[in-house]
Amino acid sequence: MRSAIGLARTLIALLFWIITVPIAALFVFPWTFIAGNANLLYPVGMGLAHLGVRIAGVRIKTVGLDRLDPSGTYIFMSNHVSNLDPPTLCPIIPRRTSVLAKKVIWRIPILGKALDLAEIVPVERENREAAIQSIHRAGEVMRHGINMTLYPEGTRSADGKMRPFKKGPFHLAAETGFPIVPVTILGTFEMMPKGSNIVRGGTATLVFHPPIDPGKYPSREQLMQVVWDTIHDALPEERK
Image 1: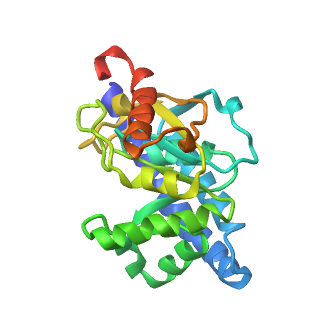
Image 2: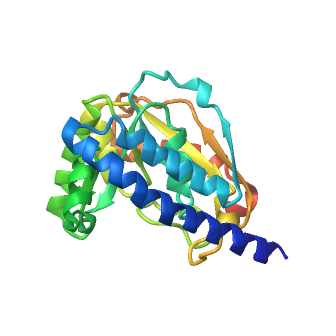
């Protein structure tokens, strides 16, 4: 019964996005190109993402969001266990956030132009030099007052347990000096683990930990370990 409800909610959410995204694009993309900024594109995109996961039966609970300065610029780093993580987390982050996205998406000309205006950062993980350039570009975006949301594991965990972190996000922290906000995402693995195409209803809890100043740690390895431990310690025992 629960699987049938989950399938129905998933299909309704997909239908919602299939209908609303093209309609929104017809109005929002021209305005974005005329204005030369993402002041309308971003809230519309985040609103559609948030509504979609809510329609799919995902309730969202936040813990510790009040620890953050709403006007501050942060590097948000979280565990990554589900395709639900980005549309659950990003709309909750105060003000705007950018992310790293696969460069192949930029092959769609109109979409690529919109992503540039939204200051989304293209990345080619297989190309080391290009990946380094992506980190530099992310630093430029953050200096415009835009947050950055990263998944330092690099990919979704198949069993819900945290994987080792990649070094790239911590090069960004060291280069820019912006504080890191570790985020522990709970509940999304149970609702939509890697390999599943169906969303089971439930509650996603986003635990925002106190910001970490990268300047307080003499090495990237130490900083990386502190962030890993902070996110990991808030996981339930069965995910450790």
